[in-house]
Length: 300
Image 1: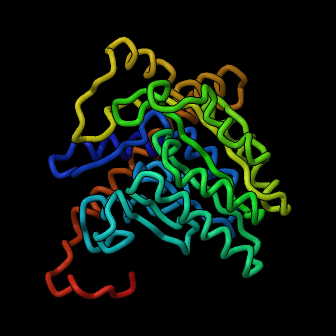
Image 2: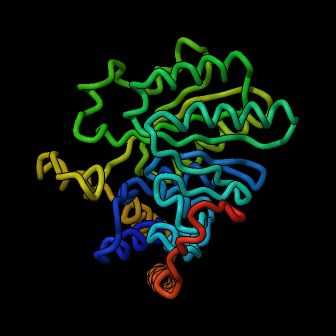
């Protein structure tokens, strides 16, 4: 979680950061879900992909280079934040179209089942995608075919500037699973342990042949919807959201229970800052793709 926060903070200090959807405030969801996944599994996410990509274990240097459009990036500078992917590392990728990742995740899960591969597919999507027909189509087919799919709604309370209550009828988005009779749960997405416990249970359920499930994680977005959006939420609401920082909450708990010492936390912060510095240096030392590469997919 520290890496995601520091990575995004450093990226946003640059004038060339480009159009981004940041994961700051929502780190516990990405980290908790990815901690429940194994090497055989795949993660599919939305366009808010920096946190999920780093949590899944992609090289921070290559992620930074990709976001800055460099040829040394995970996708040679062509995917960017909205389409970053490394399936060989269990990250089937980001999909910028709202709800578009849901049906793709179902397809990957179907491929796993028909080829008898052992993996489970997790799909991270925002609350805004719950208003799309793709969610209901995915739930229907995933249940009908008993696919090894864990759907995770990272509900930060807003679809751009429309609050969840103004755009979606259910009070609990997990209730979208009710008609399909599959396991569903709502947890505090600011508590990484609770996310991990719920995700691990659902992953085990899918891995055992039990079919799909739906996990709603209620989180807080610390920044506007995107780097190109103005903040539309009341100032006191943003302040209250930031007060629920998942990193600070876990740090306090670790120190209070004696699970970690202040010195260890400080060393971890230093290690994270060093990783981010190295990632920036790597990206800056890399070249932009050449015009000759425009029509060549290469090894991407």
